[in-house]
Length: 443
Ligand SMILES: [Zn+2]
Image 1 (cartoon, rainbow, N blue to C red):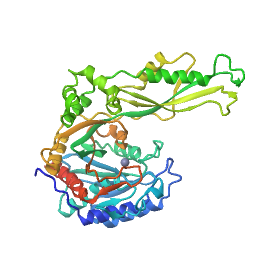
Image 2 (spheres, helix red, strand yellow):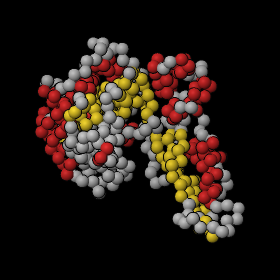
Image 3 (cartoon, helix red, strand yellow):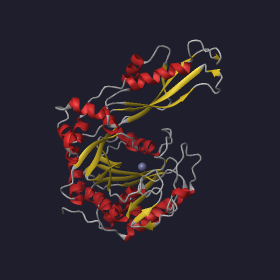
Image 4 (spheres, rainbow, N blue to C red):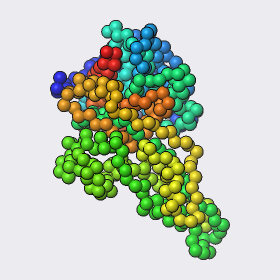
């Protein structure tokens, strides 16, 4: 097949509408979460996917994450795990929605609502694929898992984070996955498959002084000093370097650009000075080439006439794979003015390994994409600048594919914003992709 035909399937459409109707909004510490929609969602899954529930054992992990497990009788291959999350972000401003955010309205060829894209579409693909395969009599010759998190959208501590607990659960049982799929890339022109992701952490720059009355500031305040520190951080970025993964990404995407960019991306090493110059004007490219610093919060005194005795600024750091927090500290110590101290915020960063791209699993993935989306679909291995829940799985899996199986068209409505929506005619290809991959893995 060379051209993909987009055609809706009424069962998938109806199931996605039903899923969106459960307002499964997560909260940071689980405590404030309304569990009723999650309970309803779980019962809905039982009804909609009976064969899956008959064939796979279900365990509840943490407060609401689900792990389904098909146990192969005589496993011939390493296990496969598919991930998606049940939770969604809040609706935002209700009055800005054309259709109510949790109505699951089908209109203009789209299913509308919070979670329709992120991440219930992928969740639907995984569940439909498994259900249909079981119906067709498919018996995987490998252990097969589906993990559905309950708090992906929030910064939850590791001891309540569904994905972290699920990965730990598998690790305790000695499971070593052959590969796993999580959200991330999609098919839009080419098929972006994220094989690595940057690691987020926060650094606090702070300074202490005596404080006092604003009428007698002397040589300046500690907030002024923090201001100089912020300027130093912005003026002295970490140096650019080219990861093999980013090189592959630029080369694979070169064809989609015209002129100068097409030339320099097709051989980024030969045109390295030009790539660096181009990155200075392009925040997307810039983020792929180095560890970035974004100063996002600052505070000084609570009153305009009081000189603060303590001032601080928070720098959101996104580490390039391979860079360490020690390197970042060393860099900052060199550039910060005297009197400014550094500390890491409470969260310890979780580093995801970069998936190798010369593996059997990656080749199978490429074949499955070509089979479903057409042989002319360009595969673009890529580095994700955001973070996914799959980062917790480094201990049980070295082949992490961040690829949702989703075909993108201009009819989509943005995730995390009002009027999130997905065209119903892209759903069948998503299901077909995961079915195809599982069958190929079996062979
Ligand atoms: Zn998501």
